[in-house]
Length: 560
Image (cartoon, rainbow, N blue to C red; front, side, top):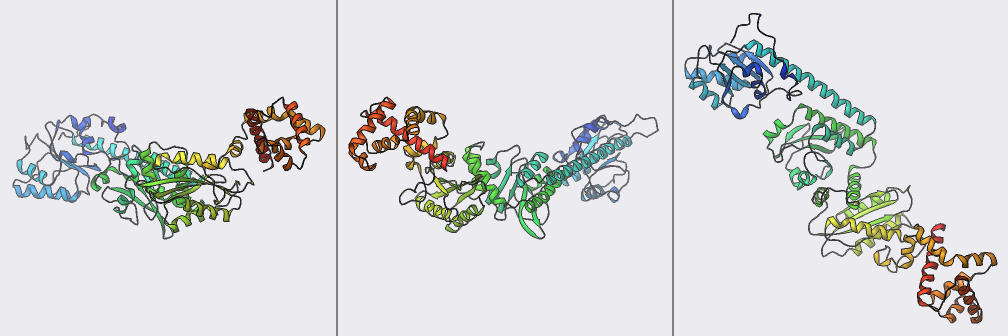
Protein backbone atom coordinates (compact mmCIF):
# COMPACT_ATOMS: atom_id res chain seq x y z
CA UNK A 1 0.00 0.00 0.00
CA UNK A 2 1.62 3.25 -1.10
CA UNK A 3 1.56 6.17 1.28
CA UNK A 4 -0.54 9.12 0.26
CA UNK A 5 2.11 11.89 0.37
CA UNK A 6 0.02 14.47 -1.48
CA UNK A 7 1.97 14.06 -4.70
CA UNK A 8 0.12 11.05 -6.16
CA UNK A 9 -1.69 11.52 -9.47
CA UNK A 10 -5.43 12.39 -9.46
CA UNK A 11 -7.93 9.55 -9.29
CA UNK A 12 -8.55 7.74 -12.55
CA UNK A 13 -12.21 8.37 -13.41
CA UNK A 14 -12.14 6.95 -16.91
CA UNK A 15 -14.49 4.17 -15.91
CA UNK A 16 -17.28 6.49 -14.78
CA UNK A 17 -18.91 6.25 -18.19
CA UNK A 18 -18.46 2.50 -18.40
CA UNK A 19 -21.32 0.01 -18.83
CA UNK A 20 -21.61 -0.21 -15.05
CA UNK A 21 -23.34 3.18 -15.03
CA UNK A 22 -26.80 2.89 -13.52
CA UNK A 23 -25.97 -0.05 -11.21
CA UNK A 24 -23.42 -0.66 -8.44
CA UNK A 25 -20.08 -1.84 -9.84
CA UNK A 26 -19.26 -5.49 -9.28
CA UNK A 27 -16.04 -7.00 -7.98
CA UNK A 28 -15.13 -7.84 -11.59
CA UNK A 29 -15.76 -4.22 -12.65
CA UNK A 30 -13.50 -2.90 -9.90
CA UNK A 31 -10.67 -5.32 -10.73
CA UNK A 32 -10.76 -4.07 -14.31
CA UNK A 33 -10.12 -0.46 -13.24
CA UNK A 34 -6.64 0.76 -14.23
CA UNK A 35 -5.84 1.73 -10.64
CA UNK A 36 -6.23 -1.89 -9.51
CA UNK A 37 -5.20 -3.58 -12.74
CA UNK A 38 -1.75 -2.02 -12.21
CA UNK A 39 -1.32 -4.28 -9.18
CA UNK A 40 -1.70 -7.40 -11.37
CA UNK A 41 -4.69 -8.83 -9.45
CA UNK A 42 -5.15 -12.60 -9.32
CA UNK A 43 -8.40 -14.26 -8.23
CA UNK A 44 -7.48 -17.07 -5.85
CA UNK A 45 -10.97 -18.10 -4.63
CA UNK A 46 -14.57 -17.19 -5.40
CA UNK A 47 -14.15 -16.73 -9.14
CA UNK A 48 -17.87 -17.52 -9.61
CA UNK A 49 -18.83 -14.71 -7.21
CA UNK A 50 -17.16 -11.79 -8.95
CA UNK A 51 -20.60 -10.46 -9.89
CA UNK A 52 -21.18 -9.35 -6.30
CA UNK A 53 -21.97 -5.63 -6.13
CA UNK A 54 -19.42 -3.38 -4.44
CA UNK A 55 -21.18 -0.79 -2.31
CA UNK A 56 -18.07 0.70 -0.67
CA UNK A 57 -14.30 0.23 -0.28
CA UNK A 58 -12.77 -0.26 3.17
CA UNK A 59 -9.03 -0.11 3.94
CA UNK A 60 -8.20 -1.94 7.14
CA UNK A 61 -5.24 -3.18 9.15
CA UNK A 62 -7.41 -4.34 12.05
CA UNK A 63 -7.78 -7.89 13.29
CA UNK A 64 -11.59 -7.46 13.52
CA UNK A 65 -12.56 -5.32 10.49
CA UNK A 66 -16.08 -6.76 10.29
CA UNK A 67 -17.16 -4.60 13.24
CA UNK A 68 -16.78 -1.54 10.98
CA UNK A 69 -18.58 -2.99 7.95
CA UNK A 70 -22.22 -3.07 6.84
CA UNK A 71 -21.98 -5.48 3.90
CA UNK A 72 -21.00 -5.15 0.27
CA UNK A 73 -17.55 -3.68 0.99
CA UNK A 74 -14.39 -4.45 -0.94
CA UNK A 75 -11.86 -4.96 1.88
CA UNK A 76 -8.26 -3.86 1.11
CA UNK A 77 -5.38 -4.99 3.33
CA UNK A 78 -1.62 -5.51 3.24
CA UNK A 79 -2.07 -8.69 5.30
CA UNK A 80 -0.22 -7.22 8.27
CA UNK A 81 -3.08 -7.81 10.77
CA UNK A 82 -3.79 -11.40 9.80
CA UNK A 83 -3.56 -13.78 12.80
CA UNK A 84 -0.70 -16.24 12.89
CA UNK A 85 -2.79 -19.29 13.74
CA UNK A 86 -5.22 -21.04 11.36
CA UNK A 87 -8.11 -20.71 13.82
CA UNK A 88 -7.62 -16.96 14.00
CA UNK A 89 -7.54 -16.72 10.17
CA UNK A 90 -10.81 -18.71 9.94
CA UNK A 91 -12.42 -16.39 12.48
CA UNK A 92 -11.22 -13.36 10.51
CA UNK A 93 -12.69 -14.73 7.26
CA UNK A 94 -15.92 -15.92 8.92
CA UNK A 95 -16.58 -12.44 10.26
CA UNK A 96 -16.11 -10.92 6.81
CA UNK A 97 -18.34 -13.53 5.19
CA UNK A 98 -21.03 -13.19 7.86
CA UNK A 99 -21.26 -9.42 7.42
CA UNK A 100 -21.51 -9.87 3.64
CA UNK A 101 -18.23 -8.39 2.45
CA UNK A 102 -17.97 -8.37 -1.35
CA UNK A 103 -14.33 -9.56 -1.50
CA UNK A 104 -10.99 -9.51 0.28
CA UNK A 105 -8.01 -7.97 -1.55
CA UNK A 106 -4.57 -8.64 -0.06
CA UNK A 107 -1.35 -7.02 -1.24
CA UNK A 108 1.60 -9.49 -1.49
CA UNK A 109 4.38 -6.96 -1.04
CA UNK A 110 5.22 -6.52 2.64
CA UNK A 111 4.29 -9.43 4.92
CA UNK A 112 3.39 -12.10 2.36
CA UNK A 113 4.63 -12.97 -1.12
CA UNK A 114 2.08 -15.74 -1.60
CA UNK A 115 -1.32 -16.07 0.06
CA UNK A 116 -1.14 -18.17 3.23
CA UNK A 117 -2.83 -21.55 2.93
CA UNK A 118 -5.12 -21.07 5.96
CA UNK A 119 -6.47 -17.88 4.34
CA UNK A 120 -7.05 -19.61 1.01
CA UNK A 121 -8.83 -22.55 2.65
CA UNK A 122 -10.98 -20.30 4.82
CA UNK A 123 -12.02 -18.06 1.92
CA UNK A 124 -12.78 -21.06 -0.28
CA UNK A 125 -14.90 -22.63 2.46
CA UNK A 126 -17.03 -19.45 2.74
CA UNK A 127 -17.17 -18.62 -1.00
CA UNK A 128 -15.49 -15.30 -0.28
CA UNK A 129 -13.57 -13.96 -3.27
CA UNK A 130 -9.86 -13.65 -2.38
CA UNK A 131 -7.81 -11.45 -4.74
CA UNK A 132 -4.05 -10.98 -4.46
CA UNK A 133 -2.04 -8.01 -5.76
CA UNK A 134 1.52 -8.74 -6.90
CA UNK A 135 2.52 -5.08 -7.04
CA UNK A 136 2.19 -2.08 -4.81
CA UNK A 137 -1.13 -0.19 -5.21
CA UNK A 138 -2.23 3.12 -3.74
CA UNK A 139 -5.20 2.00 -1.66
CA UNK A 140 -6.38 5.57 -1.08
CA UNK A 141 -6.50 6.17 -4.81
CA UNK A 142 -8.51 2.95 -5.19
CA UNK A 143 -11.09 4.20 -2.70
CA UNK A 144 -11.35 7.56 -4.48
CA UNK A 145 -11.90 6.00 -7.90
CA UNK A 146 -14.33 3.31 -6.76
CA UNK A 147 -16.30 5.66 -4.53
CA UNK A 148 -16.63 8.12 -7.40
CA UNK A 149 -17.85 5.27 -9.57
CA UNK A 150 -20.36 4.16 -6.93
CA UNK A 151 -21.69 7.66 -6.36
CA UNK A 152 -21.92 8.21 -10.09
CA UNK A 153 -23.93 5.03 -10.53
CA UNK A 154 -26.21 6.04 -7.66
CA UNK A 155 -26.83 9.44 -9.21
CA UNK A 156 -27.51 7.83 -12.57
CA UNK A 157 -29.87 5.35 -10.93
CA UNK A 158 -31.74 8.25 -9.33
CA UNK A 159 -32.04 9.97 -12.70
CA UNK A 160 -33.28 6.77 -14.31
CA UNK A 161 -35.79 6.23 -11.52
CA UNK A 162 -37.03 9.77 -12.01
CA UNK A 163 -37.47 9.13 -15.73
CA UNK A 164 -39.44 5.97 -14.90
CA UNK A 165 -41.79 7.92 -12.63
CA UNK A 166 -42.20 10.65 -15.24
CA UNK A 167 -42.99 8.10 -17.97
CA UNK A 168 -45.69 6.40 -15.91
CA UNK A 169 -47.13 9.73 -14.82
CA UNK A 170 -47.45 10.72 -18.47
CA UNK A 171 -49.17 7.40 -19.24
CA UNK A 172 -51.65 7.94 -16.45
CA UNK A 173 -52.40 11.54 -17.38
CA UNK A 174 -53.22 10.63 -20.95
CA UNK A 175 -55.53 7.83 -19.80
CA UNK A 176 -53.50 4.95 -21.20
CA UNK A 177 -55.18 1.57 -21.27
CA UNK A 178 -53.72 -1.60 -19.75
CA UNK A 179 -52.07 -2.78 -22.98
CA UNK A 180 -50.27 0.55 -23.40
CA UNK A 181 -49.09 0.41 -19.79
CA UNK A 182 -47.73 -3.13 -20.06
CA UNK A 183 -46.05 -2.40 -23.41
CA UNK A 184 -44.33 0.69 -22.00
CA UNK A 185 -43.10 -1.30 -18.98
CA UNK A 186 -41.67 -4.03 -21.21
CA UNK A 187 -39.82 -1.44 -23.29
CA UNK A 188 -38.44 0.31 -20.20
CA UNK A 189 -37.26 -2.84 -18.46
CA UNK A 190 -36.23 -5.02 -21.38
CA UNK A 191 -38.13 -7.89 -19.75
CA UNK A 192 -41.29 -9.76 -20.78
CA UNK A 193 -44.33 -8.60 -18.80
CA UNK A 194 -47.60 -10.47 -18.30
CA UNK A 195 -50.83 -9.24 -16.74
CA UNK A 196 -53.02 -12.05 -15.43
CA UNK A 197 -56.35 -12.27 -13.63
CA UNK A 198 -57.19 -14.13 -10.43
CA UNK A 199 -57.72 -17.47 -12.22
CA UNK A 200 -54.24 -17.29 -13.78
CA UNK A 201 -55.33 -16.41 -17.31
CA UNK A 202 -52.72 -14.30 -19.13
CA UNK A 203 -54.71 -11.29 -20.37
CA UNK A 204 -51.87 -9.18 -21.77
CA UNK A 205 -48.36 -10.30 -22.68
CA UNK A 206 -45.66 -8.02 -24.02
CA UNK A 207 -42.63 -10.16 -24.86
CA UNK A 208 -39.12 -8.79 -24.88
CA UNK A 209 -36.27 -10.82 -26.39
CA UNK A 210 -38.63 -13.79 -26.53
CA UNK A 211 -41.81 -14.92 -28.30
CA UNK A 212 -45.35 -15.28 -27.04
CA UNK A 213 -44.92 -19.02 -27.31
CA UNK A 214 -41.84 -19.00 -25.06
CA UNK A 215 -43.50 -16.69 -22.55
CA UNK A 216 -46.97 -18.25 -22.37
CA UNK A 217 -46.66 -21.97 -23.05
CA UNK A 218 -48.14 -23.82 -20.07
CA UNK A 219 -48.92 -20.48 -18.45
CA UNK A 220 -51.63 -21.48 -15.98
CA UNK A 221 -49.69 -24.42 -14.56
CA UNK A 222 -46.49 -22.36 -14.27
CA UNK A 223 -48.33 -19.42 -12.73
CA UNK A 224 -50.04 -21.56 -10.10
CA UNK A 225 -46.61 -22.68 -8.92
CA UNK A 226 -45.70 -19.04 -8.31
CA UNK A 227 -47.37 -17.83 -5.10
CA UNK A 228 -48.99 -14.43 -4.82
CA UNK A 229 -47.49 -11.91 -2.45
CA UNK A 230 -48.71 -8.73 -0.81
CA UNK A 231 -45.77 -6.79 -2.20
CA UNK A 232 -43.34 -6.90 -5.11
CA UNK A 233 -41.09 -9.92 -4.76
CA UNK A 234 -39.12 -12.52 -6.70
CA UNK A 235 -40.79 -15.88 -6.17
CA UNK A 236 -41.71 -19.21 -7.71
CA UNK A 237 -39.53 -21.90 -9.30
CA UNK A 238 -38.74 -19.70 -12.32
CA UNK A 239 -37.88 -16.63 -10.28
CA UNK A 240 -40.61 -14.29 -11.53
CA UNK A 241 -40.79 -10.75 -10.20
CA UNK A 242 -44.44 -10.39 -9.18
CA UNK A 243 -46.52 -7.41 -8.04
CA UNK A 244 -50.22 -7.44 -7.04
CA UNK A 245 -52.72 -5.20 -8.82
CA UNK A 246 -55.34 -4.12 -6.31
CA UNK A 247 -57.41 -1.23 -5.00
CA UNK A 248 -58.59 -0.66 -1.43
CA UNK A 249 -57.96 -4.25 -0.47
CA UNK A 250 -59.67 -5.77 -3.53
CA UNK A 251 -57.21 -7.70 -5.67
CA UNK A 252 -57.86 -7.82 -9.42
CA UNK A 253 -54.82 -9.78 -10.57
CA UNK A 254 -51.09 -9.43 -10.73
CA UNK A 255 -48.41 -8.28 -13.13
CA UNK A 256 -45.36 -10.45 -13.66
CA UNK A 257 -41.89 -9.65 -15.00
CA UNK A 258 -40.10 -12.69 -16.39
CA UNK A 259 -36.34 -13.09 -16.03
CA UNK A 260 -34.31 -12.66 -19.20
CA UNK A 261 -32.69 -16.11 -19.15
CA UNK A 262 -35.51 -18.58 -19.61
CA UNK A 263 -35.81 -21.02 -16.75
CA UNK A 264 -33.57 -19.12 -14.34
CA UNK A 265 -33.66 -20.17 -10.70
CA UNK A 266 -34.86 -17.88 -7.95
CA UNK A 267 -31.30 -17.09 -6.84
CA UNK A 268 -30.27 -16.27 -10.42
CA UNK A 269 -33.40 -14.20 -10.98
CA UNK A 270 -32.75 -12.16 -7.84
CA UNK A 271 -29.56 -10.90 -9.49
CA UNK A 272 -31.31 -10.54 -12.87
CA UNK A 273 -33.75 -7.99 -11.45
CA UNK A 274 -32.37 -4.71 -10.16
CA UNK A 275 -33.94 -1.90 -8.14
CA UNK A 276 -35.07 -0.20 -11.35
CA UNK A 277 -36.97 -3.33 -12.40
CA UNK A 278 -38.77 -3.31 -9.06
CA UNK A 279 -39.62 0.36 -9.56
CA UNK A 280 -40.93 -0.31 -13.08
CA UNK A 281 -43.12 -3.19 -11.92
CA UNK A 282 -44.52 -1.30 -8.94
CA UNK A 283 -45.37 1.69 -11.12
CA UNK A 284 -46.88 -0.69 -13.68
CA UNK A 285 -49.17 -2.16 -11.03
CA UNK A 286 -50.17 1.34 -9.92
CA UNK A 287 -50.85 2.50 -13.49
CA UNK A 288 -52.91 -0.64 -14.16
CA UNK A 289 -55.01 0.06 -11.08
CA UNK A 290 -55.71 3.59 -12.31
CA UNK A 291 -56.43 2.33 -15.82
CA UNK A 292 -58.97 -0.13 -14.44
CA UNK A 293 -60.69 2.62 -12.49
CA UNK A 294 -61.00 5.00 -15.46
CA UNK A 295 -61.70 2.43 -18.20
CA UNK A 296 -65.01 0.64 -17.71
CA UNK A 297 -64.26 -2.30 -20.01
CA UNK A 298 -63.11 -5.32 -17.96
CA UNK A 299 -59.63 -6.65 -18.67
CA UNK A 300 -60.97 -10.04 -19.73
CA UNK A 301 -63.21 -8.51 -22.38
CA UNK A 302 -60.38 -6.37 -23.71
CA UNK A 303 -58.12 -9.44 -23.85
CA UNK A 304 -60.74 -11.45 -25.76
CA UNK A 305 -61.29 -8.62 -28.23
CA UNK A 306 -57.59 -8.27 -28.89
CA UNK A 307 -57.05 -12.01 -29.32
CA UNK A 308 -60.03 -12.34 -31.68
CA UNK A 309 -58.89 -9.44 -33.85
CA UNK A 310 -55.41 -10.86 -34.11
CA UNK A 311 -56.81 -14.28 -35.08
CA UNK A 312 -59.28 -12.87 -37.60
CA UNK A 313 -56.64 -10.64 -39.22
CA UNK A 314 -53.76 -13.13 -38.87
CA UNK A 315 -51.64 -10.65 -36.95
CA UNK A 316 -49.82 -13.26 -34.88
CA UNK A 317 -46.12 -13.73 -35.41
CA UNK A 318 -46.55 -17.50 -35.76
CA UNK A 319 -49.20 -20.22 -35.27
CA UNK A 320 -47.33 -21.27 -32.14
CA UNK A 321 -47.66 -17.77 -30.68
CA UNK A 322 -51.40 -17.79 -31.43
CA UNK A 323 -51.89 -21.16 -29.73
CA UNK A 324 -49.89 -20.12 -26.66
CA UNK A 325 -51.81 -16.87 -26.30
CA UNK A 326 -55.26 -18.45 -26.68
CA UNK A 327 -54.36 -21.30 -24.34
CA UNK A 328 -53.23 -18.75 -21.75
CA UNK A 329 -56.72 -17.21 -22.00
CA UNK A 330 -58.31 -20.58 -21.21
CA UNK A 331 -59.18 -21.70 -24.76
CA UNK A 332 -58.26 -25.36 -25.43
CA UNK A 333 -56.13 -25.37 -28.56
CA UNK A 334 -55.37 -29.09 -28.83
CA UNK A 335 -57.98 -31.68 -29.79
CA UNK A 336 -60.62 -29.06 -30.54
CA UNK A 337 -62.57 -27.97 -33.60
CA UNK A 338 -63.16 -24.25 -34.09
CA UNK A 339 -66.11 -22.32 -35.52
CA UNK A 340 -66.21 -18.55 -36.05
CA UNK A 341 -69.44 -16.58 -35.63
CA UNK A 342 -70.27 -12.97 -36.30
CA UNK A 343 -73.19 -11.11 -34.76
CA UNK A 344 -73.95 -7.93 -36.70
CA UNK A 345 -76.33 -5.54 -34.96
CA UNK A 346 -75.90 -3.01 -37.81
CA UNK A 347 -75.57 -0.11 -35.41
CA UNK A 348 -72.35 1.61 -34.36
CA UNK A 349 -74.03 2.59 -31.08
CA UNK A 350 -74.84 -0.99 -30.10
CA UNK A 351 -74.90 -1.75 -26.39
CA UNK A 352 -72.42 -4.09 -24.73
CA UNK A 353 -75.26 -6.31 -23.49
CA UNK A 354 -75.04 -8.93 -26.30
CA UNK A 355 -71.32 -9.37 -25.66
CA UNK A 356 -71.90 -9.87 -21.94
CA UNK A 357 -74.94 -12.12 -22.26
CA UNK A 358 -73.42 -14.38 -24.92
CA UNK A 359 -70.24 -14.75 -22.84
CA UNK A 360 -72.32 -15.69 -19.80
CA UNK A 361 -74.38 -18.19 -21.80
CA UNK A 362 -71.27 -19.92 -23.12
CA UNK A 363 -69.75 -20.11 -19.63
CA UNK A 364 -73.00 -21.55 -18.25
CA UNK A 365 -73.05 -24.16 -21.00
CA UNK A 366 -69.40 -25.01 -20.31
CA UNK A 367 -68.35 -24.25 -23.89
CA UNK A 368 -64.87 -22.68 -24.20
CA UNK A 369 -64.95 -19.61 -26.41
CA UNK A 370 -63.53 -16.17 -27.04
CA UNK A 371 -66.16 -13.43 -27.28
CA UNK A 372 -65.41 -9.84 -28.17
CA UNK A 373 -66.23 -6.83 -30.29
CA UNK A 374 -64.34 -6.89 -33.59
CA UNK A 375 -65.66 -3.58 -34.91
CA UNK A 376 -68.46 -1.13 -34.10
CA UNK A 377 -71.70 -3.05 -34.49
CA UNK A 378 -69.96 -6.41 -35.01
CA UNK A 379 -69.39 -9.05 -32.34
CA UNK A 380 -67.06 -11.98 -32.92
CA UNK A 381 -67.21 -15.41 -31.28
CA UNK A 382 -64.76 -18.29 -31.62
CA UNK A 383 -66.07 -21.62 -30.33
CA UNK A 384 -63.69 -24.40 -29.31
CA UNK A 385 -65.64 -27.66 -29.45
CA UNK A 386 -64.72 -31.25 -28.86
CA UNK A 387 -64.19 -33.12 -32.10
CA UNK A 388 -67.31 -35.20 -31.52
CA UNK A 389 -69.46 -32.22 -30.51
CA UNK A 390 -71.81 -30.83 -33.23
CA UNK A 391 -71.65 -27.07 -33.60
CA UNK A 392 -75.14 -26.35 -34.96
CA UNK A 393 -77.07 -26.64 -31.66
CA UNK A 394 -74.65 -24.24 -29.96
CA UNK A 395 -74.80 -21.74 -32.81
CA UNK A 396 -78.62 -21.95 -32.91
CA UNK A 397 -78.79 -21.28 -29.18
CA UNK A 398 -76.48 -18.27 -29.46
CA UNK A 399 -78.41 -16.94 -32.47
CA UNK A 400 -81.72 -17.14 -30.61
CA UNK A 401 -80.20 -15.25 -27.70
CA UNK A 402 -78.73 -12.58 -29.97
CA UNK A 403 -81.99 -12.08 -31.85
CA UNK A 404 -83.85 -11.85 -28.55
CA UNK A 405 -81.52 -9.08 -27.43
CA UNK A 406 -81.28 -7.25 -30.77
CA UNK A 407 -84.16 -8.02 -33.16
CA UNK A 408 -82.89 -7.77 -36.70
CA UNK A 409 -79.37 -8.82 -35.81
CA UNK A 410 -77.61 -10.97 -38.39
CA UNK A 411 -75.76 -14.05 -37.15
CA UNK A 412 -73.38 -15.63 -39.65
CA UNK A 413 -71.09 -18.62 -39.27
CA UNK A 414 -67.98 -19.80 -41.10
CA UNK A 415 -66.79 -23.31 -41.76
CA UNK A 416 -65.61 -25.59 -38.97
CA UNK A 417 -61.80 -25.89 -38.86
CA UNK A 418 -59.55 -28.27 -36.95
CA UNK A 419 -56.52 -26.01 -36.50
CA UNK A 420 -56.46 -22.68 -34.68
CA UNK A 421 -54.26 -21.29 -37.45
CA UNK A 422 -57.20 -21.72 -39.88
CA UNK A 423 -59.68 -19.69 -37.84
CA UNK A 424 -58.92 -16.62 -39.97
CA UNK A 425 -60.52 -18.48 -42.90
CA UNK A 426 -63.59 -19.28 -40.80
CA UNK A 427 -63.89 -15.59 -39.85
CA UNK A 428 -63.51 -14.50 -43.49
CA UNK A 429 -66.26 -16.90 -44.54
CA UNK A 430 -68.55 -15.66 -41.77
CA UNK A 431 -67.87 -12.09 -42.91
CA UNK A 432 -68.78 -12.97 -46.51
CA UNK A 433 -71.99 -14.60 -45.31
CA UNK A 434 -72.86 -11.51 -43.26
CA UNK A 435 -72.22 -9.20 -46.21
CA UNK A 436 -74.62 -11.29 -48.31
CA UNK A 437 -77.55 -11.13 -45.86
CA UNK A 438 -80.22 -8.98 -47.53
CA UNK A 439 -82.12 -6.80 -45.02
CA UNK A 440 -85.76 -7.69 -44.58
CA UNK A 441 -85.49 -11.12 -46.12
CA UNK A 442 -86.71 -14.07 -44.03
CA UNK A 443 -84.20 -16.29 -42.26
CA UNK A 444 -83.36 -19.69 -43.76
CA UNK A 445 -86.05 -22.23 -42.96
CA UNK A 446 -85.51 -23.91 -39.62
CA UNK A 447 -82.52 -21.71 -38.71
CA UNK A 448 -81.85 -18.37 -37.07
CA UNK A 449 -78.38 -17.93 -38.59
CA UNK A 450 -76.76 -17.80 -42.02
CA UNK A 451 -73.99 -19.99 -43.40
CA UNK A 452 -72.06 -20.33 -46.66
CA UNK A 453 -74.65 -22.53 -48.33
CA UNK A 454 -77.17 -19.68 -48.06
CA UNK A 455 -75.26 -17.49 -50.50
CA UNK A 456 -77.13 -17.86 -53.78
CA UNK A 457 -77.20 -15.48 -56.72
CA UNK A 458 -79.30 -12.84 -55.00
CA UNK A 459 -77.17 -12.75 -51.85
CA UNK A 460 -73.95 -12.89 -53.85
CA UNK A 461 -75.01 -9.84 -55.85
CA UNK A 462 -76.08 -8.08 -52.67
CA UNK A 463 -72.61 -8.66 -51.22
CA UNK A 464 -71.13 -7.14 -54.41
CA UNK A 465 -73.59 -4.25 -54.53
CA UNK A 466 -70.93 -1.57 -54.06
CA UNK A 467 -68.82 -2.91 -56.91
CA UNK A 468 -69.24 -0.44 -59.79
CA UNK A 469 -68.83 -3.30 -62.27
CA UNK A 470 -72.08 -4.84 -61.00
CA UNK A 471 -73.82 -1.46 -61.17
CA UNK A 472 -72.52 -0.86 -64.69
CA UNK A 473 -73.63 -4.32 -65.82
CA UNK A 474 -77.21 -3.79 -64.59
CA UNK A 475 -77.39 -0.40 -66.29
CA UNK A 476 -76.01 -1.68 -69.61
CA UNK A 477 -78.42 -4.59 -69.68
CA UNK A 478 -81.59 -2.77 -68.55
CA UNK A 479 -81.01 0.96 -68.91
CA UNK A 480 -83.01 1.41 -72.12
CA UNK A 481 -85.93 -0.57 -70.72
CA UNK A 482 -85.97 1.51 -67.53
CA UNK A 483 -85.83 4.73 -69.52
CA UNK A 484 -88.81 3.59 -71.62
CA UNK A 485 -90.87 2.75 -68.51
CA UNK A 486 -90.04 6.17 -67.03
CA UNK A 487 -90.99 8.13 -70.18
CA UNK A 488 -94.15 6.21 -71.04
CA UNK A 489 -95.41 5.14 -67.64
CA UNK A 490 -95.22 1.47 -68.55
CA UNK A 491 -94.00 -1.42 -66.41
CA UNK A 492 -92.17 -3.62 -68.84
CA UNK A 493 -89.55 -4.45 -66.18
CA UNK A 494 -92.16 -6.29 -64.09
CA UNK A 495 -93.29 -8.29 -67.11
CA UNK A 496 -89.67 -9.20 -67.87
CA UNK A 497 -89.11 -10.22 -64.23
CA UNK A 498 -92.16 -12.51 -64.24
CA UNK A 499 -91.09 -14.05 -67.54
CA UNK A 500 -87.55 -14.73 -66.31
CA UNK A 501 -88.71 -16.04 -62.92
CA UNK A 502 -90.79 -18.77 -64.59
CA UNK A 503 -87.99 -19.74 -67.03
CA UNK A 504 -89.72 -18.32 -70.10
CA UNK A 505 -93.22 -19.81 -69.59
CA UNK A 506 -95.44 -17.13 -71.13
CA UNK A 507 -98.71 -18.55 -69.79
CA UNK A 508 -97.45 -18.56 -66.20
CA UNK A 509 -95.93 -15.10 -66.65
CA UNK A 510 -99.31 -13.78 -67.86
CA UNK A 511 -101.07 -15.31 -64.84
CA UNK A 512 -98.55 -13.76 -62.42
CA UNK A 513 -99.03 -10.34 -63.96
CA UNK A 514 -102.83 -10.63 -64.31
CA UNK A 515 -102.44 -10.08 -68.04
CA UNK A 516 -103.73 -11.79 -71.14
CA UNK A 517 -101.32 -13.94 -73.12
CA UNK A 518 -101.64 -11.59 -76.10
CA UNK A 519 -100.62 -8.63 -73.92
CA UNK A 520 -97.63 -10.56 -72.60
CA UNK A 521 -96.58 -11.50 -76.15
CA UNK A 522 -96.80 -7.86 -77.22
CA UNK A 523 -94.79 -6.64 -74.22
CA UNK A 524 -92.09 -9.26 -74.71
CA UNK A 525 -91.67 -8.20 -78.36
CA UNK A 526 -91.29 -4.59 -77.21
CA UNK A 527 -88.70 -5.68 -74.66
CA UNK A 528 -86.74 -7.58 -77.33
CA UNK A 529 -86.79 -4.52 -79.56
CA UNK A 530 -85.68 -2.11 -76.84
CA UNK A 531 -82.90 -4.37 -75.54
CA UNK A 532 -81.91 -5.79 -78.93
CA UNK A 533 -82.05 -9.31 -77.51
CA UNK A 534 -83.62 -12.70 -78.18
CA UNK A 535 -85.66 -13.88 -75.22
CA UNK A 536 -85.71 -17.40 -76.62
CA UNK A 537 -81.95 -17.59 -76.05
CA UNK A 538 -81.12 -19.30 -72.76
CA UNK A 539 -77.83 -17.43 -72.45
CA UNK A 540 -79.43 -14.03 -72.99
CA UNK A 541 -82.24 -14.87 -70.56
CA UNK A 542 -79.56 -15.74 -67.97
CA UNK A 543 -77.77 -12.45 -68.55
CA UNK A 544 -81.01 -10.53 -68.12
CA UNK A 545 -81.97 -12.53 -65.04
CA UNK A 546 -78.66 -11.63 -63.38
CA UNK A 547 -79.16 -7.96 -64.33
CA UNK A 548 -82.72 -7.85 -62.95
CA UNK A 549 -81.61 -9.54 -59.71
CA UNK A 550 -78.71 -7.08 -59.40
CA UNK A 551 -81.09 -4.16 -59.91
CA UNK A 552 -83.43 -5.52 -57.22
CA UNK A 553 -80.67 -5.89 -54.61
CA UNK A 554 -79.26 -2.45 -55.47
CA UNK A 555 -82.69 -0.93 -54.86
CA UNK A 556 -83.05 -2.96 -51.64
CA UNK A 557 -79.70 -1.64 -50.45
CA UNK A 558 -80.78 1.94 -51.15
CA UNK A 559 -83.98 1.52 -49.15
CA UNK A 560 -82.36 -0.23 -46.17
